[in-house]
Length: 293
Image (cartoon, rainbow, N blue to C red; front, side, top):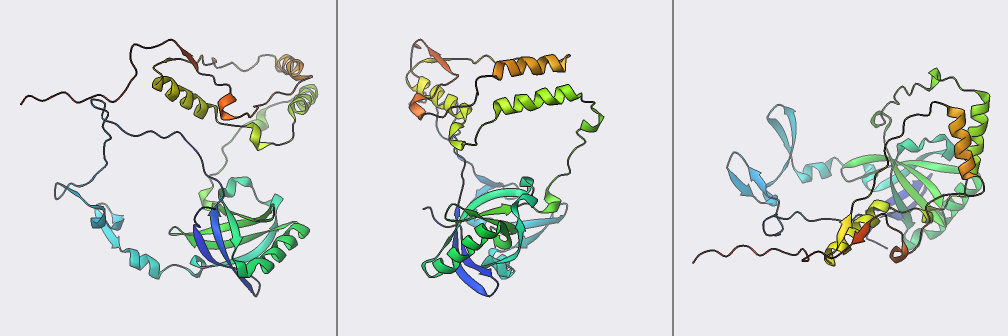
């Protein structure tokens, strides 16, 4: 397992157990470097001080809070350490709630909460009790210069922890305007049928990032000196003038089959990218022009 991002104690009533947090999910992306177009050399980001008119090192940088335009309070790392709350090392379960009562909009990041060797029995007891009762825990912990409200739930044989947004961080829902729409009973009935025709058991392995696959195929084509053909984008469709007719047509297309992304091995995945022909030369690192002696 990867290195832990937080170590401390989980408290449950008078029971305290040493635990560790490990990242539970991480996005994967094709990454690019920034290059100088003329010679394909990687460019470097530098810290520049406009007052001294020079590039400075990272150890010369401090954190500052701007309390007035152009005026700052300088904060040293040691000062931040001094004011860390007790939740920096002790995570206390404050209460238990039903999972369905928590709106997913509050979820931020996911972590595995694993016990140290000495805490396996009380940890296992907590997991079983939460599974049996159907409750999940709400706790607080501090890490990365921030105190989080955390949501703990049973996951497979252990606990998953989700950091959560605070109420003031969740934006108010816009006026969607649905209360002004008049729906006919027949339209609602066919919409139900359309949903049932598309219904399936949740399987996360069926889904993957098509854009990521297209990027990989494009990069491979460049390496092989081939040309990538642009993908035809669908034109935006206008809202149907006859909603019932559109619903029935959609239902007719879906009946007898269920469509959905099919996950296969990366080498066998179908890509939207088309590759054709051979270019005259493979793009490579350009050599800088020779300078006169």
